[in-house]
Image (cartoon, rainbow, N blue to C red; front, top):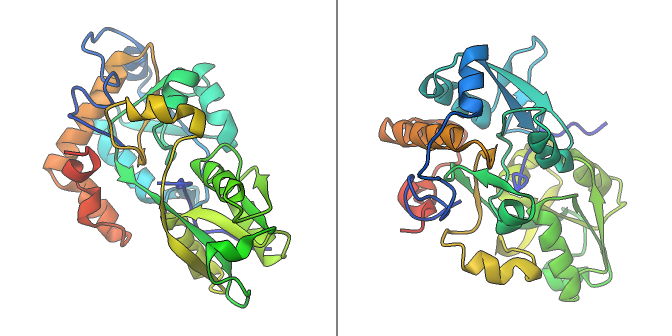
Length: 297
């Protein structure tokens, strides 16, 4: 069985202005009591995650401990929120937003790209970005495909509900693919590629790098693909006032105090260089991930 150690768009894998006005309306000026008070009273924050087991994002070791860049960032964030404990609530990717709104957990910390479709369409908010992604097309090393155009009429694998699924559908609309086959988790598309059930996989750069450590018989074709919103959301996305493509922590709209506290934590972590050190330790850091670059200023 293929065991994945990759992730996404990191799955896949953002945002403009400053921490106090991040994402336009993402950091409400009115800060009131909300879930943050309940979290502090309980002493534990519940974290929704749809990429558990996907390196380098987050995974659980055999002894029950956790690892991963998001796990390490969470550990640095907790003291700034005034709590010391956390509980991961693993769910399928497309259950993250419904689970948050149903209060199964307090936040989404799972490489989720900030989009207006999620903010306006699904009704949640996001912190300022802590990571930024681009996508790649992966094929088997011995396949005949050398460029995206070669995939005409072929099956492209991806994960349901992700930005990568949007990219895959865009490739098909351009004639660079015949159909899209979406899976419920991030490992399945790569397993399908190995079994030749799909001809290519659209994956975020981070996940692809990790996956190649497990299945080195894959390679990328074409240029990096910037993340893009769905066509029906392009106008609203363009007017959003933040740089598209960043991953943020998701919160419920009725939790402005929690959102403000998370943004303040990112500020303090960046002042101490903690986020950079974590990304460097995974070989992921470059200046495009600096706060200034991700905020689009």
